[in-house]
Image (cartoon, rainbow over the protein chains, first blue to last red):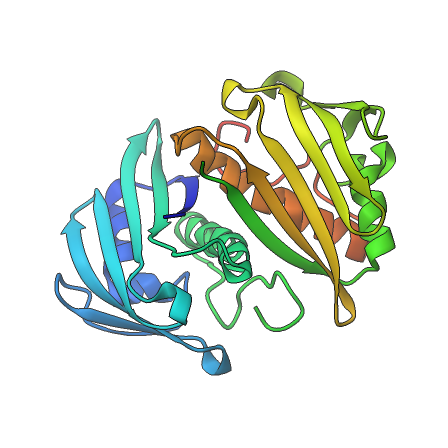
Length: 148
Length: 148
């Protein structure tokens, strides 16, 4: 099944990157400011994007400073059952983030949109960690003129 | 075989987007300023990125205002034989650009990097058409601290 892959390298430590991915406060700095729930293994996290919807994930796996893995349990139909993972590794002075949104059932147009939009949010994660100012919803970078 | 997909919507006409994809001058505004060659069908286009390499493509298909398709004939090993396509369509007042870099033999780490970097260049294409100022190499947005 097709996957969305991305990589960014961030001037931060694996511990800092992990905190941005594995805590509600951290997630609020780069994906959406309206993040809530439990980020522990087995917990459920909700990500609200105003009128543009809601994504709910279940936390499947956490490996401090190394790995965060979620399964989508609520959201767009194409996302249901897909998994979103972040693998962290030291890369010189940086932390490399390998991103994988796996298990798409088809390469539909929404998958094109989501690939580009994930890049915007991963650059938001990078900016949040490097400068303290990310671009989470509702301050996200738009790739179309329809609010996303 | 895995593909890289992206979509951006641009406040421009299909003719303007096509010119940015099907002419040497247009390509110079968003991918690399150092673009040369022949952009006609059967022609070869070279894209230089200083010390970061060279990509050569052969133009496979051109459909004015609708489609540009290349095959990679020189560049990183993972890119050889892959195809890079841009499909244009009217989307309200915008032109939608569906991007597909197809035929990757494996989901290696370089594919992660290229997916994110293509998003930066497609946002550069969007900016070039909407504001007149793109971010082609050597003014490209870096996703790592190693010059790409």
